[in-house]
Image (cartoon, rainbow, N blue to C red; front, side):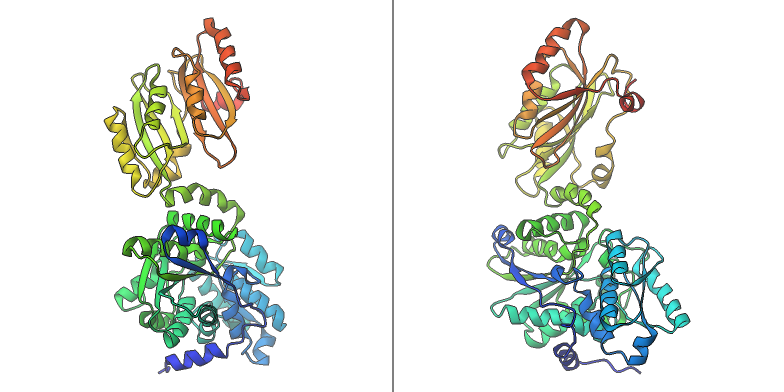
Length: 514
């Protein structure tokens, strides 16, 4: 029976780990803005600044540097969602050996390209790490390669443990907890082993995505649990089955587990950016998301927490999704479906109601409407909030003002799809004119637009979304009597906003015009 390594064994392996041939001692930086907001001192361990933008090269190199000359001549193989792959590829390049990298087909292209640039031979297989792992084991046997496990190996665990060693050396004052993202468990096993050996009073808190929580479920069940499926937003932690050794260590070392969702991680990516001007990947922001959740749950003040920013290999195209969901994740935006009477002046009265909501001025972040019923109008609207938990109160206030409102802030269908699908053909939009406006993005601009319109001009379509720029874009459908053409042109001139008449645009004719 295989003998388990003891805490003293791991401490020795971490202290003697060979990582600094390729890795750097990453900075431990205060997150000043986040610390002020949370009333606790937040420290960021910047593993996103490693040569491959992830901590993974520590464990990979420590493992490979201890292989025999014969093993290095044959070459190595690994399975990885990306960051471990880059670590193995860089280590292989440094050690002069061949590296075959099996990656899930869902791996972001930025990681695939990075591995190829480092000389790794990429094989794409399966939808998750577990799928890629199975294929890698087949190739290992067929080609006589040495498998470099991304997490379930004592040498890999020891390499990752050097992060804990650096952290305690860099910060020798009070430290209440260290928050560590968990996929397969190598990082938390290594960091936890070192911290608990030297500073057992410091809490080690493991963080998992709520749709990829294999370690949490395994520890709760006292045995390893295989997930039938995993979420892919945080591809770096998308593991169906944790390692046997990492499970054993996490069960002993982790004081508490926290699960975070996609919106919370998006908000945390923004928090990290505000403090560092760096963009971390979802796995890299999980620890920060958990700190915010921990502080909100325990109402702590004046404590010191460290978050390991474990990676920054983010696909640029994913930033659109992150920016969209960050406001909802922080609950800085409320999404509502509001029903108003389909009559002249309703839009203006609705906007005036927004201006009188409790809590002060709120910006409209989104406004989607398409005429569809002769008696009522359904508007999809986004509003800025001043804190968490406000969306339900805002909806209730609209209802009290006579506008039936439904809170959609936590509705996945609304956030993912419906907000982009308000529209279509309408038999009530006869003689509609379609205009596209650009206007300065400042409070009151939307109300100015509506207040300058004549009450007899019916709005049949309205689309606006705040994109974070200094100008906004509005698409408006209007029914203006032909007899009031002169007044309409005067309105456009008085408004002073650049516009384009899109009434004859073929896209409009195909998808919106009756």
